[in-house]
Image 1 (spheres, helix red, strand yellow):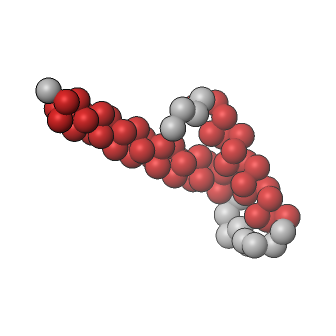
Image 2 (cartoon, rainbow, N blue to C red; image 1 turned 90 degrees about the horizontal axis):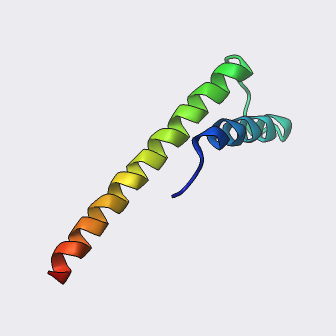
Length: 65
């Protein structure tokens, strides 16, 4: 997925803010820490997706040859 790294923190912040506002979650840590952890999780997941996409392209390229 193409996603600018700078927007990940914005997304994480909005997610935490929205979940807290709707009382879907109650933080046991600071909002800043929750945003940081969420930011890291999103980045990790996007990196997994990028690696998977790379593997698929390699498999596809090999099957064409």
